[in-house]
Image (cartoon, rainbow, N blue to C red):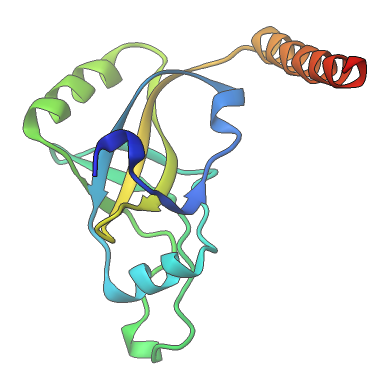
Length: 157
């Protein structure tokens, strides 16, 4: 199966990311999870809206991502919902990201957590810079115009 036709089963999406940030590029990273975290992700109640990725000890981690406890498991098997989770990427990509993070205003935003066609949990990370208030207004105007234009074309036909 080629990359273009790959089926993604989304567990969590950050829909505000493209509104709040300019996304320069994206990359796919693996994520180290416990068994209860995987089960909970498959339930689809996770959130990456307030999460970010960063370096800690020379490795890339996902901070503040919320994966709720898996209620069918016992209390001693539960995980901490907002614990830092290690992201798995190649050393060359990590060095490139580390250089990008050191630039002023560049941050790593998780765009989504999904399961690929082999059932492995992956995180799509965007290399982003923050938008100013006037940039957000411009984005909103463009989105409104596209919606109105589509409505006019639909009504015309």
